[in-house]
Image (cartoon, rainbow over all chains, first blue to last red; front, side, top):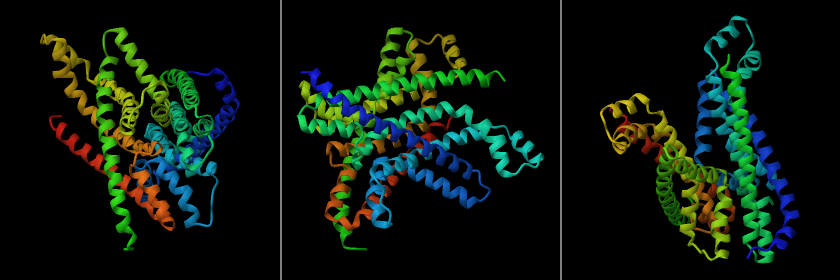
Length: 221
Length: 216
């Protein structure tokens, strides 16, 4: 039933595919973190139009499936604009856009948790807008939400197989290709499943450890 | 309006039906799993808590698409062959049940302990305390997070496209093969349909919330 020598022959290919999965995860997470921060700051804009735009963007992106968004980006953009992107870039942008909306909520909760007095003190000191954000607000808003961001890193990692739909050769598509050559499906899919389980479990243990350490730091004050 | 829409809409309507069907069926599975696992997580028996914990941790760590592939493509190799619909409902339901159980657990723990003590002082039995005092109060807290989870679940049904269940997403890719120059409009329309479906969930949850929070 379970053939070990077949498993060994699969491993090198799966490992290099695993690297693609990890790279896509990290790049997607990076885009989501930066764009999410931009959205969260824009949400605090004093212009109602900006706030409304951010809000509708977040609502819309959060209400529609990543798979369809990725399809739209990959297949429609080249027809609407002169740009066409590789599967990897599209995947990273898709993941980044989708999870930036989730990430913006995370930042928002961090920013809302900064006491009002800090804003007032910054304006009393006549700090510029940029300085207020960079030196006063964000250094207090971001560290407490790092564990939640870590959870989204895990979520993004678990979503990367969706990118196989736009022909990004990551773990799942590699397993699928291997299966279509050998007609043996059980081993490749099981290995991929186990790999995803292991990495997610390890990552979530890490996130929990960071959370405990941070809690110790923030509660004591 | 271009004449092509009349060709597209019936197919998309068909897909919408399947998408709604998968969402509703898997929501039922996940709700049952969430309540059962959530209650087990607050059980006084360590063994029951442990089993629930393993279920929750396992399915939360799983990648849904990989799980779906495994259930649909790999399980037949060990003699378990499931129809597409069953495989999809099972994978999505079990996966989201694990997330839902956390909502149930935290909502139950969030009921003030005075309520528990009062129920105890009134000499209510264990079951009465749970079903008459704790759960009715916990349900109100569960509604908004369950609404969000249901939207996530609706979005996740798009993954059944991968096992060629003819949902919205699948129908759209078929349409795209037939009307290639219309690709942007087809996928754009698809996004809008999903948005409308999500909005329906949001509105329903708001109405329920208003109804059940009336006593507060």
